[in-house]
Length: 212
Image (cartoon, rainbow, N blue to C red; front, side):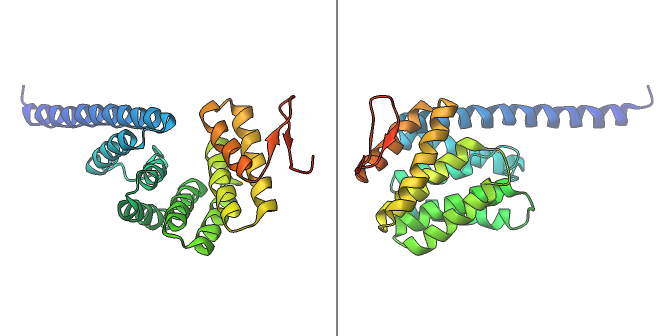
């Protein structure tokens, strides 16, 4: 009866916790909606959903990208949607945050996002270095889908700058990983890049070079 102040404090903490949990659910829902839209190629909707998730996460204090890594996806969708300025701003935030963390995941995401922006800006040499840095970090952890997506971006860049052998190797590795994971929406994107190199698939599904 004489501990009403403690009860009030407990109630306030509980309410804050419930509000925080509601925000977490909303963030996760927006990330999921963004992923679905991105997979469909609806980058405008994906940007809206990912941006909502990012803004909610920032307000709630969830700025550690190890908790729910989706901000590199937002950068990719912004680039695909033509908003390079906003993509560059968000990629730089990832780079700045990753610099304070020892873990390879945020560093890989940041370098990958930065590479996508640099490639879109036409700074191909810098983009190549960024993708190489991202791939180096991906080798330290088991995130095969993100690694394959980085290989796809790096292989596409290699093709653009005329490094056909490197492009083919990276794209074929990306295709192998996507196929192993059953990541069907990503497979046509790799095949399109390989087709630009003159590669095609044999009747048994193996990748052939133009000389084969």
